[in-house]
Image (cartoon, rainbow, N blue to C red; front, side, top):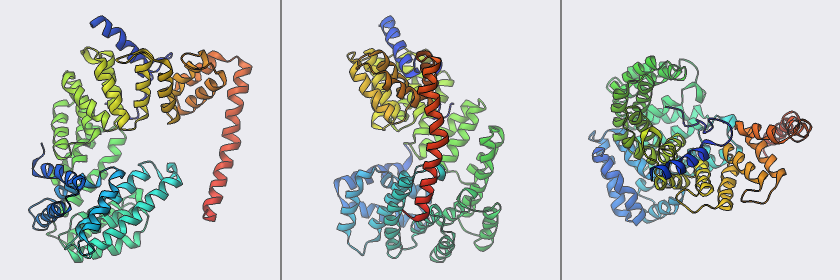
Amino acid sequence: MPSSSARFVEIPGRSLILRLLRAGVAAFLLAAGAGVAAQESATWPQLLERRDFAALTAAVVTADARRRAGELDFRAFRRLTHALSDLPAEAAPQFEAWVAAAGKDDGIPRLMRALFFNAQGWKARGNRLARETSADQFARMESNFDRAVADAEAARAKVERCDVCYALLLDMAKARGRREDADGLFAEAMRADPRAVAAPEAYLEGLEPRWGGRPGDAQAFVARFKQDFPTSPARPVLEANLLVERAEPHSQAKRYGEAAVLFQQAIDLDPQRYRTLYRLAYAQGMLKQFDKALANVDASLAIMPKRGESLALRGWLLAELGRAGEAAPDLERAAGLGDKWALREALLIYARGHRGLKPDPEKSWRVCQAALKADLAEGYACTGGHYYFGLHVAQDRPEAAKWFRIAADRGFGEAMADLGVMLWSGDGVAKDEDAAIAYWRAAKRTGEERGEQKLRAHLSGWRYFARVSLPDWWADVVVTPLRRTWDTILTLLGW
């Protein structure tokens, strides 16, 4: 299964998104349930939306009491809360109203709001390396974390044995590099509840090298924890975490056999790890153990049904097993959840008749619109492709250019190349060679091969030097280093 960053380009001349839509036009003309926790979690966002705050508080209190009594696995409880914390930013006023209606003495609404703002903070930061993350992203993360910390601290004073409260505070201390805070929080969490699981796991994650831990710190902590808390239910969870960390280098190096063994050992210790189940299924898929992989990705989706990467993986596995008809709905759902690879594969199936299925322009359009709702640049580009070719909608080249421009302005290289072609020839837009060159140069900087190809094809040697080579040299050698130096100065000054 290709990674989600796989590119559309296959051959020069036109992006895959346009080529598959064009092929789809021709082909079309020629052809003419996850248990109690999942059930409960579906109602929590509905209760919040209806502002039935009393019922919502009672539902969370009941689930937390079951967790403390050992009747509800801590991961199952976190999945229940995830249904609320993963809501979009627009849900913030509903959480505000819930807290206001409950009053200061009720910690449950504050805890749920803390989880929500914690999730918003991570969404704002993104998952790139720190050096690739903008100051604005970090600022938005910090703002959300400040709100989450205030709520989590208020909740732990009100909620009995609030393991999740401490796990939240440890998670944010990890993100902020506050190791001393984490040490104190962990000790306090274990005094409050010696059978805590979420807090020890959150503390262990902060010991990983990527968060500033030293090699061996995590292993030493787990060994010490097993001595200090010999009957703790957190022991297998922590041991499973170490196994997953050992599997990571194997997985990155594509030693999928070694990775699969370690992932399986982690699952044996802690069966409810939906991410580890997904990674085990991926490794098995790469080993062409498709039946085993399908069973494990099904298990992952039974735990967490709305995971785009898991749906995409199941779609790929089904397609590899010759079950493309079953694969297509999973790919479509994954695209709607923001998975880029699934979007491309679904378009290949619906627009081009890939994997033996007949082209279906209506479903191809539906996939594009789902990608739009997920705010994928590819969704804007494929909508433009539909208008360009008149696939399921009336052909409208100016409308196509509008959608290509949106995708291009979001940094999508293939849309930049396609818009450049339209601008150069005046196809549906006013002819503008300067703008075409600018878009092709931008496409070239994203790694889109057709940007360079179009520049070479339309500019003579001297014009290419003057319009491409010289400006690129100036940007790389002069402008970019100066900008980095200036940003460093501003950071040192605290501006």
